[in-house]
Length: 120
Picture (tube, rainbow, N blue to C red):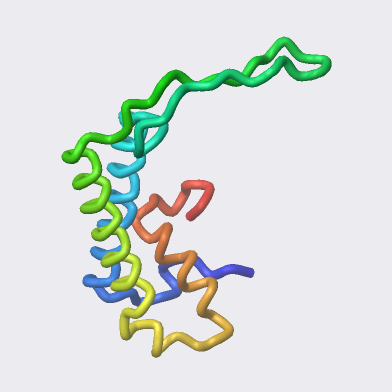
């Protein structure tokens, strides 16, 4: 049976890095929703009608990302990589038994959720 986050004594800097990772990922995903569908200028397209369906897939022309959008995406990705490395290579993991490693990593992801939440 998986252990909950209280079964592990996560150091504060690891908890902070995991929270920053969650928050940065959420902010990046929200920002990505505002971007054109293609990073580079691309013509739009429309697919043929599919058998037994009236659905026709299509995309409008994409102007591509602006220089500012490319730069912001690069900053998000660099920060996500930095935080992912911080979390995954933290010295805490050396103190976890090999058999508990997956449970500990999953518990860390949900460490700040209320105990009565479905994931907690």
